[in-house]
Length: 338
Picture 1 (spheres, rainbow, N blue to C red):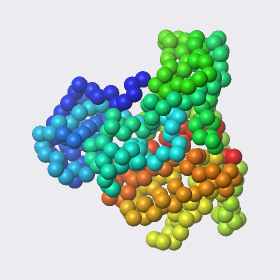
Picture 2 (cartoon, helix red, strand yellow):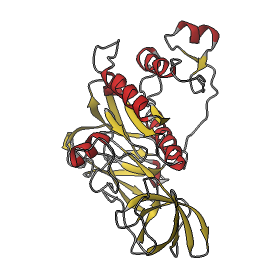
Picture 3 (tube, helix red, strand yellow):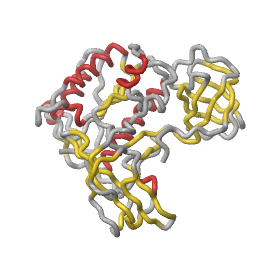
Picture 4 (cartoon, rainbow, N blue to C red):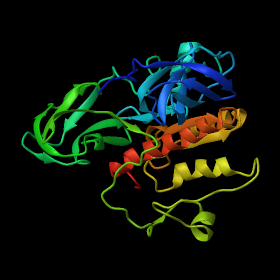
């Protein structure tokens, strides 16, 4: 598995630009393929194809782009990077870590053209304590636990045999307990299709639902800790709820309260389409929250995705898919509720 986006040798050129939408001559482009647009390499996603022409939704400001500038294919869809180090982070809608972008640019606004090479979603050099839970000769299937990593004082990250490999096999090698980066091979599994080298992380396309063995009906209530909600508007574990309301009515305050007092083990707020000042205020509030059960920072079991209302609509949509994919990844680890 590559540690970054694999850039295809296939390139095209911009034909015309209309706001956040770019039409490009891009032979071989795939629907929903991630592309880099223009000399700056702006993030974009192919949303429509007509012959050799690709219509691209750009996730960044397109001011200054010109016809004739290059468009570079990646050959893969927009994907979430999933592995240790994903908690206690603040990302934008395409999973670029916002604090790292600020450290790189020293600007209050997200600079354009910051790709995964400059701001990787996961730390590729940090060593994590790997504790194996399988041994050589064990049979494993997709979703089985290979080992664990104490990611934060509140969360033990479970390293699964990931669904990208589709079929199970027999463990031929497992790394002994110790410190490893997410790029190190921690297990080798012999399958019918050959030997699979498993690392602590993998990518998953955000628009593709994670596979599951069984879908359970939402019958058990989620205790939120808010009496009004639990009494008048109960929420089921695995269910959904909406909080409609005008500006300043308390929607964000309710989300903060749910994050602190509900039975949810992990929290993934997606600040999608919030005005910049409101998003900044909500983010500062979330960063300061303390877990009432342990007294530790709530961020140790939280990942925040921020995508403000000045971004293109499709970028806001992508941020929701990104948040859901990250949540489904931890669902696969059976980390649903306390």
